[in-house]
Every structure is written in structure tokens, then in C-alpha cells.
Amino acid sequence: MKPVRTLAEALGAGVLVLDGGLSNQLEAQGCDLSDALWSARLLADGPEQIEAAHAAYVRAGARVLITAGYQATFEGFARRGVDREETARLLARSVELARAAAAGVAEEVWVAGSVGPYGAMLADGSEYRGRYGLSVRELEAFHRPRIEALAAAEPDVLALETVPDATEAEALLRAVEGCGVPVWLSYTVEGGRTRAGQDLAEAFAVAAGNDGVVAVGVNCCDPAEAGPAVELAVAVTGKPAVVYPNSGERWDARARGWRGDIAFDPARATDWVASGARLVGGCCRVGPTTITALGVSLAGGPAPHTDPGD
Image 1: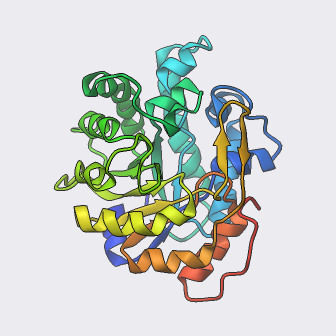
Image 2: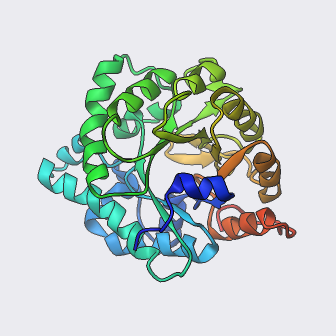
């Protein structure tokens, strides 16, 4: 069942807890994600695992679920011999699985159709660099078919996420025009700039004045980047902020593994909310236990120390 309120209405009323990293929960369930399609492969080969992962986050207190569509593209599936009709069906399935996982709770749960960056399709870490050498028009043409397929499945919002540069953000916002579904725009950042090295205020400004964008912010970044980015996103756009950093570890694309220290502290979320964040959760390596602690912290209780991957 779809929520009674739109996501924009809910954000006007308060803060919503997002889920955490889908991939780490799938791995915790025993799934092998070493494939270039990553979690998207399971849309075809193990949909029950995706629904179970979503359900784990619902039990943890998440009220917005991000679908398994991040790395699901027509091009990526075509390399596996999957035709366009079947790929569109799998993209729709990503929304259906999240909706099904939320069916057992009385609270409203919103579904965000994940639209990952062009670099995710390349499966070489390019989403952490951007600047693919493609024009806005070329990137728009890449993104539009997937957006149309996802929109047809009627998610509550499209998550334009882990966007590494303003050029791709502009292309994505063009691609969603007329799709009939609101969106949020979320950059991945480093050192207070986009991953492509652009001024972050200018990057956020591409969404200013766009009524189809319900929130702007950052994801899949070091938690230390989150606070300043939230403040800037709100100041530049006047919109609610969305923020879901990763655990603080860094993805090594060559080794296909995470490196570094865990730095996600659920208690920090109250500062993000004070700065204007209304969609708050975790990204890679942030698991259900930490999402529960995040919800407790936002509700005013003491957030216990957790391992984000739990």
C-alpha cells in the first residue's frame, strides 16, 4: 500500500529516517555481490533476498526505502543478454519489492526509486570521480529510459543519488522532466566539493527553484562531510536536506573492497536535523542496527555506540 501523504507533505511535518546500505545487508544475508551488476543482479536471481533486506530496515525503523536500482541499467543488463523489455520489468520489480517489504507495518513507508550515476554502470569506481567526457545531452539520453521505466512503477520519489558532478546533476534533472514523480538530488562529495572537484554551492544551485525536487543533499561520503554540506544545501536551495553518508570507510575500486576506519555516529544526526536535514539515514556499510540507533537519537533518546555494518 502506498502512503497516504506525499513525501513532500511528510517532510513538511518532520524528519524521516532513511534505510542504510542495501549491499552490506545483502552480504550479511549471505549474498555474493562480486558481480559487475552488484545488488542489481539479485533483481533477477534473488528477489526474495532484496525484499528481506528491505524488510530488515523496516524493522529497524526506516520509513523510506531506497530500491535496488542503483546499478540497474539497460546497458548493464544488455551485457548479460537481458533484453530491454525484461530490464524494464526488473526495474519495476525493484519498486515492487520495496513496497512489499513495507506492507506489514502500520506506519507509512515511502519508496525511493534509486537512479545511480552513469559511473555505476561502468562498475569501475567512476561514480567517485565523475567527468566521464560525456555532454549533458548524452548523459540525459542515458538516464531517461531508466527513469521512465522506474516512474511507470510509481515509486513515491526518485533518488538521484551518488551524483559526482554538477554536469550529471543537470542531465538528471532534465531527464526527469515530465516523469510525474518528485525527486531528490544527492551528491557524493569530498573535501567540501563534488567528487569532480566542483564548487558545492554551484552544484546545489542546479536544483534551486525546481519544484520537482523535494530535497537536496549528500550521500556516500565521509560522515564528517555531512554537516557542512547540509547547511550549504539548505542555504543555497531553500529546500529540505537529504543526508545519508557511508560508514566513513572508502571504496577501493581496484581491490573491490572497503578501506579505512568507521566514523558513522548516529548522535551526529541531531546536528544535521538542526541544520535543515529532513531525510536522514546511512549509505554503504551502515546497517540496520545503526539505523535503529539513528532513529532513537532523532527521537531524543541516547544513541548507543554501534558498528555501522551491523
